[in-house]
Image (cartoon, rainbow, N blue to C red):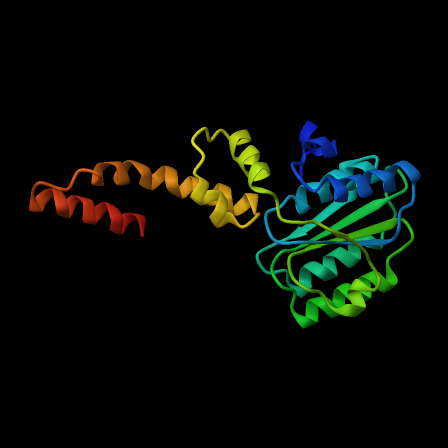
Length: 220
């Protein structure tokens, strides 16, 4: 379960994808809420954070939010989700189910999810977050919100916000619009940079060369 913080209350904390977050805020402002949403776009561009913020705006208590996420969502999780949906909210008048399907859903899970969408009670809102194509029958039952890759400047801002003062242009370019990838590459660069700096001066002995080789093997 995600804990509510200031970052998870306002869409202003999301960098990039202003069109998508503006649509979501308008849905809240106009109380124009539909039973199911599909948030699409590549991995690491802010979809999940936007989902949690949106969910927190829909309910009166975060206890009414169920987040299903795993490297591989299984059929048992979907069944537990259906059970969660079967009970009315204890606080407020809405429950939100977030399916964080960043790994491609199996056919069995997709069919179970379709059943959930078809039979979800009126008080339940289902939000599917996915970087992969979903079954057309699932997509047809959802209002799709599309998220786009971040610009290089937006990725640089994200990296700075995470405390990285030295920003490598090569890392930003390699991230291809994904802040998540950029942060992962930045972490790796922090680890290997001291060794790269050492290698700017060639080893002056076999022992030193072996030391460098051992360090690279540890990194690999």
